[in-house]
Length: 565
Image 1 (tube, one colour):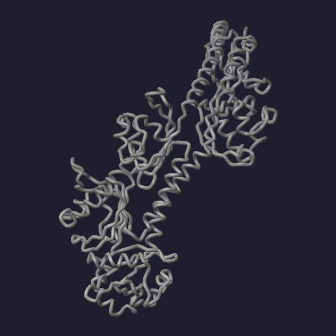
Image 2 (cartoon, one colour; image 1 turned 180 degrees about the horizontal axis):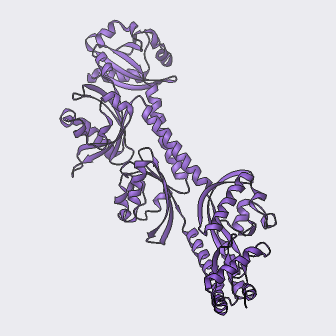
Image 3 (cartoon, one colour; image 1 turned 45 degrees about the vertical axis):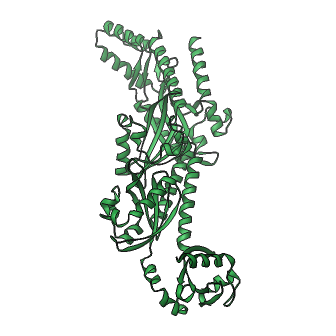
């Protein structure tokens, strides 16, 4: 009765588990399935109990399951695996654990399998990989140079340097500076730049501190290049610089007066406008702009442009604007010809550049939206294990940090000081170095909830690291409870008064109880033979009769008596 109560107790535990559990006998028949499994497979109990893998799955899948089950029966070692399974006509990826269980009451052996559907997790990992590849491809194939940098400040928040964290191919082509500048200060990569372009330090520093995007046009004498720079702030203290080489454009702008003499030969729109706003001349390709303004030569430009022309004349400075005409975007320069009392409007089509910038922005937004929609913690780092991105679920693992900016940009060791002691820090660096992923279940102390068990999958993402982290505390508790149940049944097996010997299909001894050991000693003494020899005789008798018995555990007292004198 106590055994029945114990079995009923553990059966209820299994039915309360969220993960499906299946028990198979040595004939691979399903003899027990918990409630979670019926729900998982959307089948009734009558449809599954007593069936085998071949009744439910394709032959190819069933062959694989049987082979793994037989290996557990033969070795007694648990099998951990990720495998594909067809459920209700739909492919799923599942994580399975198969363990050998010996029933101490009946003597039968069983496979106890726990199942976790990780289809969604695998989909998340694949989407992250594809998103990262798409983002990296876009990054590398942009025509404009891009640099992702960390700004350095002194104790008074004055910008004093920046470190290159990543650059694209166009950066190398435009500047001639190679990728070995990664993780170097700009003052090391371009000696003398702090004296050549101090305004660039102020420009990037302001963007990194305020988070406000800005544009700048600057000539670097150290590189002999004019740059048009657009800077963004992905997180405080960092900036992304998107720049193009405008050296040729600026040289051409120095010839404004010459261009004014031959505007019809210019492939871009050129419009001469009097100080009162009347169009004096427009070359052929300016038709797109004039149509948008609804004016022709001898007519006034719109009020907005009249105002810009007035401001330019009063300030004595050229004006620059970006304007959309139809489906095209133009960069407009209002160049003063003061002596003549008019301005020349030069337009340059920058549609391609703007679309690329917008695609980059949308890609970043989609990537962030994707991360925050995941049900598992998703984390990305650079090659030095500095956090680049983390979703809302991931923040929950850092109780003292509630905002993304509390984590992003910091190194793992700053956020988790004891990480090196766990050995995971070195393993993460090894993943980045070799590209080989790894998975681990680890226990992490939590100040509020105590020990939390985490399933961690680490993989290379670009030049850095990707992590998928899942809380498996409840699963671990269930596994522990199941292990305790197995231990209880084993203790019962050892203590029953009947002599029991457990063997496998090849009649190799798996286990025996205390009564068997006493019986073997008794008859060996009576027969005046070593216990090993008597045991071998018993096994020989079992081999002769194998297949005639229903179970792999047989009472052996009568066999020994046959050998008595």
